[in-house]
Length: 112
Length: 114
Image 1 (cartoon, chains in turn yellow, red):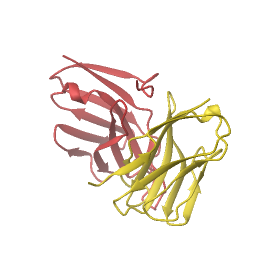
Image 2: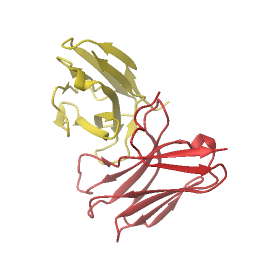
Image 3: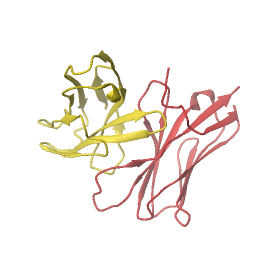
Image 4: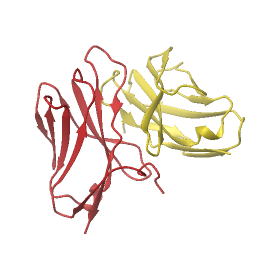
């Protein structure tokens, strides 16, 4: 089944404790992206990747890192999480940038 | 529960009625548009898309209309069902020249009453 998977789905952590949210797609898509979704603010892009080893900042990259060592995986790294990073996070992929994106199920993060 | 729907405009319809959800897009150069449905606790799900060389496209129970003159996009859902209750987003690709992102609208909550 073609899909985007994310892990974990739910995470509670404390300020400053490094964490990684994994994202994987099995559709051989070149483009992958991370979004955060907050009430009243909609979907905001954090980082995106056009292909392996090619990443770039989205609209709200501060406090986040990403890597794209393999085509299928695009982990989101929070080196030192802060409470303002409490949010719902979505990974998405598409064949190419600007085309239909397919979303993962979301990761709900709470930073205390 | 799902908190993403707070502060969103809400369209309430009776089961069986037709629903029309509207979206105003921002960039006159946008050439590709998508509608997504997001159910509580899930990620956005692709419904239907349309390119700027068309003004109407139909799917199963859904129709998307594009009016480039006024930069307006609408999603029509025929015979709305309780399972259609969700938040609906439009998205636009500002350019066919390989622009690297989609721009998402804020969303509209559709509430279907029996």
